[in-house]
Length: 75
Image (cartoon, rainbow, N blue to C red; front, side, top):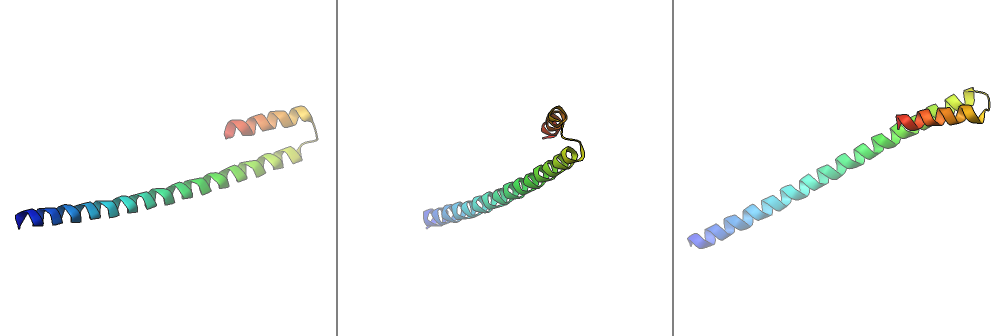
C-alpha cells in the first residue's frame, strides 16, 4: 500500500508540475507578445517622427541622409 501511495503522490506532483510549467510558458508568451507590440509602437512613432522632420526640411538628399542616420542611431 505504501508503494501505491508513493506512486500516486509522484503522479500528482508530476501533473501539478506540468500544469505550472504550461502556465509559466503561457505567461512568458503573453509577455513576449506585449513586448513585441510595444516595440512596434515605438518603431512606428520613430518612423513618423523621422518622416515629420524630413518633410519639414527642404528636399535635400544630404540633409535626409543625416536625418536618417540620426533616426537609425535612435533605433
